[in-house]
Each structure stands twice: as C-alpha cells, then as structure tokens.
Length: 240
Image (cartoon, rainbow, N blue to C red; front, side, top):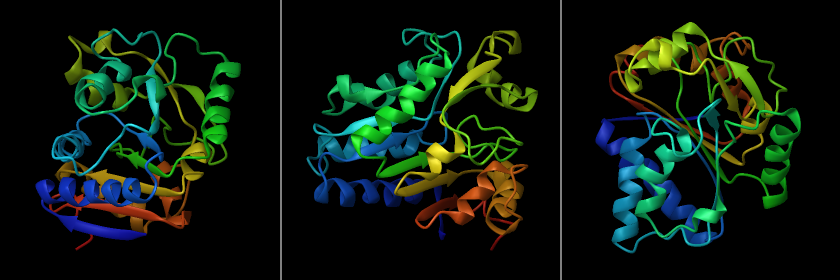
C-alpha cells in the first residue's frame, strides 16, 4: 500500500494525475467511481483537466460502487444523479457507457449481472473509494464477508446518521442500498482510496496498521497488490 499525505487540494491534483496517466495509455479504460463528499475535489480536478484537453473520457466505461434502494436516477439524492451532476454532464463521456447499480431492481439476479458486466468489460482498471467512519467501503458494513459480490445491504444507523445531512431528516435517508461486494472491489487492478478530515483519523490508522478483519472492511485493502491511500493531514494525524 502506497500512502500519500498532503493537503486536500494537492490530494485531488495528485490523484487526478493517476487518471491522466492511465487514460493516456489506455483511453478505453474501465473506471470504478464513488460518491459522497470525499471525491468531489477529485471530480472537479478531472473536469478541469478535461476542459484543458489533458484528459478524455470519450472511450471510457464506468461502474459506480453503490446506489440507495428506492431511489431512481432522477432523485436528487440518488448516486446516478450525483454522478451526472458532478462529473458525467461536465466531461466528454458517453453516458450510455456509465453504469450505476439499480436502486429499484434489487434482485439477486440483477446484482449478479452487475458483476458479470464488470467482468465482461475486462475488469476495473482503477476503483475509487472513500472510507466510512466505521471502515465501510462502498456500503459494505462491518461484518460483511470478504468474499461478497454485489448485493443489497441494510445500512447501519451510524451510516444513515452520517448521510442525513444530504436529506431533509434522518427519516428520509434510505435504510438499504445496493453495493459492490468486497470481492468485487478487490478484483480491481488498482485502487485509489481517499480519506479527509480529523473524523477519519482513527479508522485510517486501523485500516493501515490494524488486523485484517471483516470488522473493519477497509482493512482488506492491506491484501491488495496496488492500493494508493490519499490522506490529508488531519486524517493522517495518528499515522505520521
């Protein structure tokens, strides 16, 4: 695992260069994307680089980590809407080649088809991750088996509480989500994970130096051969 500690602004710039490097060599790369506040600076940097002609997404295929159950793509808190608003509508990507799990069809068959689509595309070249305060990656909560594939999950109260700022009240936060499984994530050729802010300091330490255990889902990343962990100074205060 390669650890990069820097300012929030520089993290976005440095992580974006990984995409420039990949797409210059493989314009039709398969990219795994994440949502939430953590990747917003990175997406802003990718939009800037695209407008400057330094990166193109026209041949790229994307797969997102997760989606809330019960929200369709037109809902302003769905992750499809998030991606369209913050990245896809601002770059030269073919939206028909962007994939987000369905929040309306939660059948096991549809979940399995998502994994098969990733495999058929050739596998994810770079998977982007954030990390929850409890160590969740995607919506794989503590206790999720490392061998899990894409599936529906019940969200913990702590995860719903962390996401309530995006909704009118906690009652409006969905109780379930569809998420890539840990095995799906680990099948990516490279992984970029970003952690920002003091609230993430403890889980960053556990993820990097703690035991590899389903109790801390992100700890499984210790076993992946190509992980880059981008951490701002506040999130890194316990590992410096």
